[in-house]
Image 1 (cartoon, helix red, strand yellow):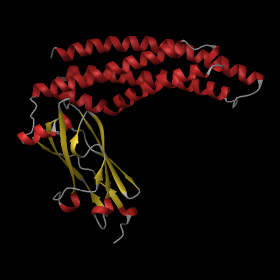
Image 2 (cartoon, helix red, strand yellow; image 1 turned 90 degrees about the vertical axis):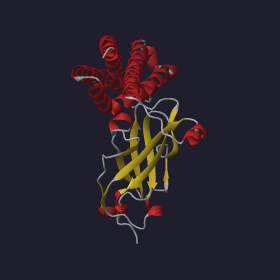
Image 3 (cartoon, helix red, strand yellow; image 1 turned 30 degrees about the vertical axis):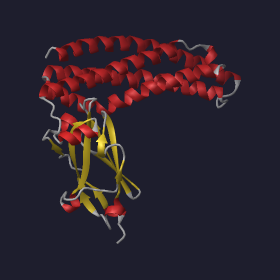
Image 4 (tube, one colour; image 1 turned 120 degrees about the vertical axis):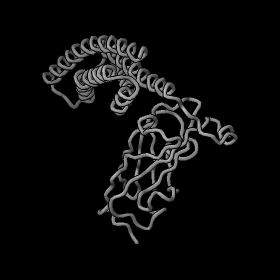
Length: 293
């Protein structure tokens, strides 16, 4: 029977079956899904997994009451050696496991934390259990590390843009340097933007309301400077690229576009540097709060 994909409705379960019985916020974030042709892509984030640990992850679907694990799956988020924190992906080739799949359904993960070395884990056959103190430490390291990287890469972007002058219209090495800085910054920005809610939930769980408010405010400030300054700098860089590729032509139009883009870059790179210094102060105060509570 051919699957009627036009009738497919995905109602993703937020309930996760974890062994040992941890809550989802402690290791695995709520699942996300999307339908891609005849496959379903399921993604989630791992937070708090230690470097010397891996996870054995199996996935089940509600259409059979979560009885049999799905086998036609691939990606870095499933199998016996899921390692490292961050985003994980599972791709389910639906029609290899099912003749049809129509209606609303949900997924569930069964995840066991084990030693990183599979031979040691097999010998022990006992899941590694993290204490609440271990989980709090791992959460602190993940949150503080992400914000520290965001500040450092943001400062690098501000520094590179602040050095821009008329040579940006002549020397392709200048734009390459900017693009390299932007690429590194965007990677950590995407991580912060994607994980900020999970981070704030962890703070509320392991610290207190004051710490949660401080982290929430810090995240808001970090993402606001991205929207107000980083994006404005990139818009000006886009204008530079238009000039360099002769999409803006005519002596008067080009002159005005050059002057405007350089003014924008000068203004927003200076503003960005000030805001990053302020963010660093907030980061220092917030990290101190997390360290001592």
